[in-house]
Image 1 (spheres, rainbow, N blue to C red):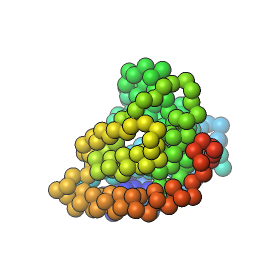
Image 2 (image 1 turned 180 degrees about the vertical axis):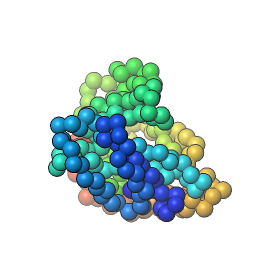
Image 3 (image 1 turned 135 degrees about the vertical axis):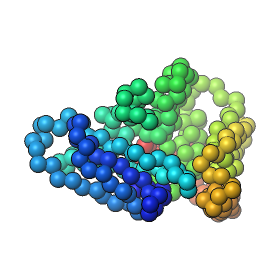
Length: 236
């Protein structure tokens, strides 16, 4: 599915081996796209999804792929057999995915940028579609309280744009007096305040901040078990 709709929706091509099979214009709503394959499955060497129209005048299209199924065999977004070619299909900016979470994928990207692997620790959180910020902080808090291999005296969080305020609030609330928390808010190139999309995004972030501060976090503090007693479930 796409983050935009209509003529601004994401478009992708499906390749099998080295042959272009068909192109699809997606929708904003989740949908399954299917093609028949009449050859021998043993002839399949690779299947490629080519996202070929990123960016638009109204914002970032964002193509979302939840899974790929070949002959009833499921391939998730973090399958270890996945490679990414960035920008061009020439192999010059190819990244092999060897992680099963967004945190692990981020670690791989940082290593590819030249950061020593020993300086990066991936802390995956719950697999969820709601309250992602809260679940991510809870996973970090669990890891921090269980690890004895590193001494942490304070943290700085790097986040994007208006979302940073909610991230900072959540970390401070869940970590409480464990350690001081700072925030580094990077400029958000995807949501400009001089556009309708940017104003809508800002309104959504303000609403989410109010929800977190006055509803979610107070409610969670009342029903949450004592620190360190519960392991995050379905740790993806």
